[in-house]
Image (tube, rainbow, N blue to C red; front, side, top):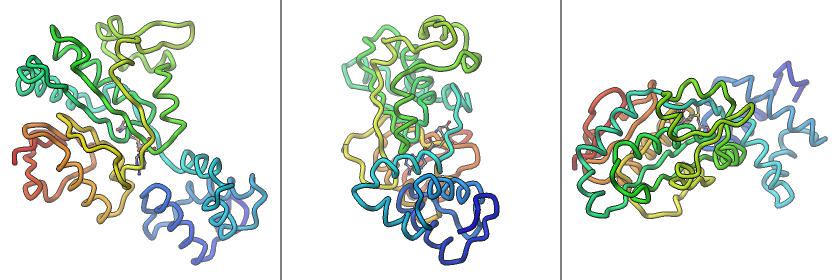
Length: 276
Ligand SMILES: C[S@@+](CC[C@H](N)C(=O)[O-])C[C@H]1O[C@@H](n2cnc3c(N)ncnc32)[C@H](O)[C@@H]1O
């Protein structure tokens, strides 16, 4: 492998990089040489004074390579997100909770929402703020939100619930006043909202260590990094984890091609309802 800006890598090296990225994250590099990812991996190889990709691959698969594995996952994932991104989905969630599940929640059923590639947590917190308002009048412990992501650094950030002031503009001001606390240069999510969410590290392409079903699942802007086989399997597994009448929200450039077979009915912009 050459210097980090040249990307003159041999086919076998690229093959090994692709294999490593797929094994670590489920992300498919395809045939295109993704210079950004190659550059990041090259930097990690150099920082560790390792000779090349083969030795690096062995290293991260050894017990000594545990910390390095976390670093490389953080480096190769794209974590862009924001509060109330694709706002329509939070309007759908509000409608879902008020119209389809309010009565169940009123009778004591837990309302469960999963933000399955939650990055630094904004999606899960946006869902929590929405759900508290949609189910107003009910005890907030009715709401259980799971936020998961493969990137441990992002999960750490999500758990802290602390964000830069300039991210606040995406939160409607009445929600901000209700659910957020101003610090000097940052703001924090209130303890009430934090208490509704559990954040966990999870590779969504691997086994899920829970059996529960959800009333709503956000799986947005992550399948775009996977190959077709991985994505098809993901939709299938997710659809089996949604309650009847529950909904799944996916990213703006994502689609569930065989939604009907999975018992999912399209209900709006990149949103599906479980009907069977
Ligand atoms: C572009 S962000 C999307 C965040 C949020 N869902 C949104 O739409 O704003 C993609 C996230 O997917 C995560 N990710 C990538 N591969 C993953 C995997 N196999 N399992 C779980 N999360 C993954 C990344 O760490 C990153 O935080």
